[in-house]
Amino acid sequence: MLVPIHEEMTREALETRFSPRALEIIIAANKKQDALKGQIGHDEFHFDNNALDQSFRYITEQRGQVIATLLGPGILGAWIAFGRLLHTAQDFYSHTNYISLWLDQFNGTHPPAVEIDPVQKSMIDSPDLHSGKLYLPFDVLYFVPFLRKVSLALLPRDSHAHMNLDSPKQGSRFEYARAAAVKRTQHELGILQKLLTPQMFARFTDL
Image 1: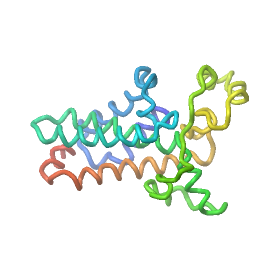
Image 2 (image 1 turned 180 degrees about the vertical axis):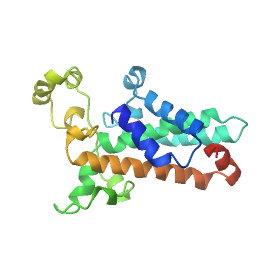
Image 3 (image 1 turned 135 degrees about the vertical axis):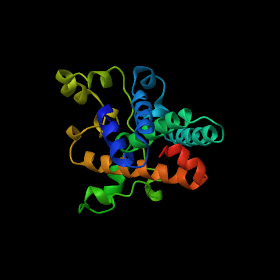
Image 4 (image 1 turned 120 degrees about the horizontal axis):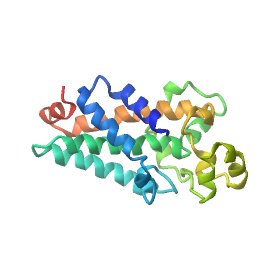
């Protein structure tokens, strides 16, 4: 998703769960994943190019980094790792076809976006789950507004340009991707709350 949307979703999901200083560091780490060096050669940061296993593993690794940091005296590394984790988890819904798979089970009568289940196992494990591929240089042209139509005409349907739900411009399914990402953000915090001792979790949230 677009950087401002990542920030907006993270604030919505976590604003009452972390201290202001912790939340700002988490958001900064989340947004940094979309810097140029995080875009080149790091499909696992964004669930791009069908790097599904790598991206799920990256989330697990960052969760482990949070715990490892909190086992010691440090705290900054935990917030940074959590921000990285959240960026990848949030991008899952805008860069894969999870939303389409979830909606398809309702045979055209779609429930409201707020009812989406962001971790439905049958969808996550589905052999039909895939993410958008980057076809260079045409996917780059997609980000140039006056070349977007040309780019879309040249790109296959499994391209990132065609599949992404990065902003409201992508249509009504964006709201489902956004709602799922907000819920997943809260879900990830819930996982850590179960894994950490109450004392470690309190230090993590900094409240």
